[in-house]
Amino acid sequence: MSGRVIVTGANGFVGRSVCQALHSAGHEVIAVQRQSKPAPWAVNSWPDDFNQLLRSNDTVIHLAGCIAGDSQQLTKVNVELTQQLALACEQASVRRVVLLSSIGVCGAAAQQALSEEAPLSPATAYTQSKACAEQALQSALHTTEYTIIRPPVVYGTGASGSFALLQKLVATGLPLPFAGLNARRAMIHVDHLADMLVACVEQPAAANQVFHVADEPALPVADVIRELHRAKGRGSGRLFYCPAWLLNRIAALAGKGDALRQLQQPLLVDSSKARRVLQWQPQQTTRAALHNGAVLDPSPGWQRTADVLLAGSGLLLLWPVLLVILALNAWPQRQPLFRQQRLGQHQRLFTMVKFRTMALGTPSVPTHELKDGGVTKLGRFLRASKLDELPQLWNVLTGDMSLVGARPGLADHHELTEQRQCQGVFAYRPGITGLAQLSGVDMSTPAALAKLDASMYRQLTPVRYLQYIALTAVPPLRRWWPLKH
Image 1 (tube, one colour):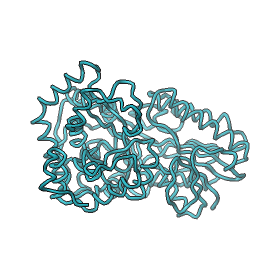
Image 2: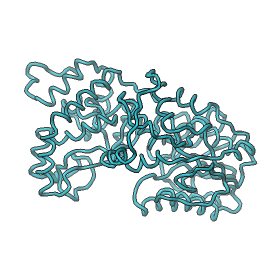
Image 3: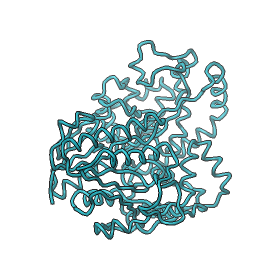
Image 4: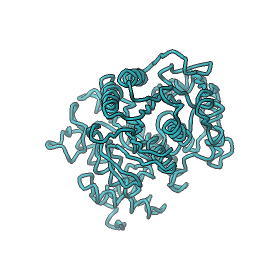
């Protein structure tokens, strides 16, 4: 049964796969998203008036949402926006609304497989907002049908969250202290979830139902890591045991304490109802999907090896300098480090860290958009000497960044994001330095910046990689080693 399907959050990780699956199944897809880019289906900007877009007998798949932020922001996006959409769908006599929720509404951990009859027990502000969104949807719809899907962690190309963290750690090629992570965690591949959402659009039996979905079998986290190693041709990987207390302490210092705690807890999901009612079945086992769908880094292998060696050596050699700057910067500001969410490889958000160079309270916008600059006296020196970037060696070591690459942009810098999407820049890791920075091209000219970034990635060689690093560290070298575009 083909029809007109409206997908909110269509350019997200799940949304891209869902739109492609619907398109392949013969449905007319109307993508609703914050950023516009070429697609084989109609694209509408978000959030336009729903009443102008909706038609009778449409189906709406609601994927748009917020996964991070304070309770007020999560409620505004995940609950209030869902309620507005539901009311608009009811008024327009939409056939069905399919809501993507989270298995987390039933709890953060489960020794026994969670079925649809499990009581709601959200443990975080995010899962609380998703539980409220479910209730808002059901309360607002009377003639319009609803279907609610509760998946666990979704993995595949462009994934975020705890699975993306595992991928980054595996990508380092270093021995990992996770042999003791034996808790089984349910997951689902993004393509399997997309197939389920298509089934919820097409099958009458999905009306007014809640479904739990997951790949089978659920694997221990250590086995997931081993499978990712095998997918990259590294055998089963080198895992060693580390006491839980020490592992938790290290993770907390790296700002990954919550992610590690999640991986240490079992979470099992019962998806038998979806198999029985909708005849839905994942195309592959969990191991096969992990192996066949592992994200392959388009960057050459030598670059990641060089990043790890140089960043690791830099942290070992420069730690006294880091401590001195940390102390000096802590005296006037009391917050010597600056952390900010940036767009990384595959448009995944990561936390970039650097020494604070602007006064507290400075708006979180690109530097060229600040009228008075907002830079402190010490900050001017740190920026001029590039010492403010030193903490990003840790981002390089964890795989969020490379030493050489495009500077990561802000998520709300939409023009630059769109230009980089068109140029394919997000296929690569962002970097600390690169051709654009050395050429004086910044985010004030998004089209020129994205074009230069793409050119740098296509022409990057070991020699140019070393040149960009050397010219950043010692600018006078340009007299003898000029840049080539």
